Structures are given as structure tokens and as C-alpha cells.
Length: 401
View 1: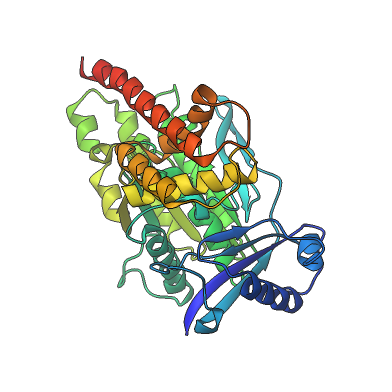
View 2: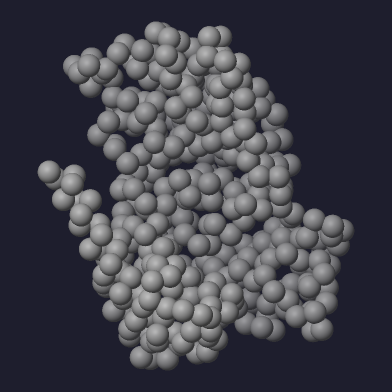
């Protein structure tokens, strides 16, 4: 049977046993009938009192290609029962030799309440999320089994690249969160360390490379706890791993070259630990040093959403607005479905970040009140899309001039 991952997020005060809650949850899911990539957060107190009192959410993973409801008898369910950390990001403040206090990074304990359903709300084509999860799990498994990296090379680095607003940073955070859940039998907990690249550039000549080394030394101190999964996120990696040939041929100071050298050295140093994964993003891949690109095990391009992905984004927005009673509850008819597909076609060229703003703009500028009919809301979205594209043209003209 094919594996199926189901997560049960318990409320923090819950002490219910895993065996008992998984049994109740399976019966509940079979009763209500669910599809894949489903997040359930509301449970009827009268009909499901235990779920109502003990469970914050149930998450059923996405099954690529599945249409309709899940037949659980065809799957081997892998249960993940856990609670969420509610503390939020914590700043890592360090004393610089001549810089005073520096905010090197933020630390987020995993699984975290701040990003608990982020993975389910990121929509891409071609099974990108599932493949990244497999890549990351394989990296961890090879390390756990002692595979010699001098023979089978694995640097523990993932690079997501593509235009702005396509969800690269969000996907890195969601991947770290999901790994902490899927690998909970191997690690007691996880932490996402998001590096503040700008804090690593010193006003003092030759000091930036030393700051990079100091930061990675602090990370290695954390990584040495083998019961902790450590995911390091470096957003806009080109700021730390800028192509050295451009530094030499241009006007970049030699301090930038020292930073790149330090980053590459520290990646080579940290890869021997089995519980670490380095997640990086870039909007400008041509500016990244080739030696860093060569070290990235996975290089994944994230482009602008296709109409199919846009449909999923808008559909998730409608579900949220219906739950909040902004949009009136009711079945989506053929007319609304056709209009939504037209809207998706009109939305081509917009980033995922822009797409999620469209419902807000539609309501703010073209609608009033709550419990709005879906058809009226779709008309308002068309107006919002036209406005967004018109406004973007002014900025594109400014960039060309």
C-alpha cells in the first residue's frame, strides 16, 4: 500500500495517548470524507467532543493526481502527533569586536505555530514540494547511514531560485517545518535559523569574513546537539556568495571576496553533521559564485504560477474568506467555476505574493460589508486584477527608463 502522512496537532494542554487519538481521528476522517491537502481546524463539540477538546488541527498530505475523496483502505497511514511551539522567532544578538551588538540571526523552534499550515497553502506544479521533501529526507538518510561524502557527494545545500514573489523563502520555511514533523522519530525537535546577511558586512575592512566565520561557529555549537534538526536559511544568497570573478573585474572590494571564501569554507565544514540542512534562495542567479552553485545539491527553479496553481491559490483564499463569513457560504456552480478560470487566465504574470493580495484589494476598493455573494466577489476580483496590472506598468516603465 502507498504511504499517507496525516498530522494531528494537539492542543498544548492535551495529554491524550497517540494510539487513542489516531484511532478516533481515522474514524472521523472516514466518516466525513476528505480529499488530499486538507487542513481541518473546527470540530463539532456535540458530535466529536474529544477532537474538539484535544486537537488543534488535522492535516492530510497532498496526494498528487488524486481526484475526489481518499479511500483510506488503499493507504498505509503514517501518523504524526505533536504540539506546536508558540514562542515565535527569537533574535540571536552577538557582540561584534568593533560593531557593538549585531543581530546575526533569528531562531524559530519547530514545529512552530507561526508557520504550521504554510506548506499546505503553497501551490506549485510538477510536484515541486514533494520532490524537495524527498531530496531533503534522502540527504538526512544518507548521513544517518554513514554514506561517505567523499564517494557520494552531498553538501546538504538546497538552492531555490526564480523571480521575486514566487514563494522561495516561504517554501524554505515550510520545508524546514515539515521535515521537523516527518523526522520526529529521529529528532526530538527542530530549529530554523534565519541568517541576517546584512549584519555580516562590517564597516571595517577585512572584518566581514571574520563575522561569517563567527556566525557559523555559533551555528555549529547548536548543530552538535545530535537530537536537534537544524535548518539554516540564507535568503538572497548572492549577498554572501557574490560571484568572485565579478568582484575582481568590477569595483567590489576585496572584503567581498573574503566573505565568499568564508561562506564556502564554512559550508564544507558544516556538511559533516548529519542533522543540518542549508536552505538558500536567490532572485539573481547570475550573481552567485559558481563554486557555491556547484555545492548546491538541489537547484530548483520557482517560476510564476500557472493558471492551475493560480486556481488553487484563489480557492484557498475563498475558503478562508468563507470561514470568516466575508463570502457567503454556498456551492460553487458552473458559472462561478468558469468565471474563476477566466480570472486565473487574466492573472497570469502575477506572482504568488500578488495573487494573495487580489481578494483583499477586491474587497477594499470594490465591495462593502460581509456575506458577499461569490459571483459579486469574482467580479470585484477582475477589477482588482486589472488595477494591479495597470499599476505595475508604471513601475516597469520606470525600470526601463
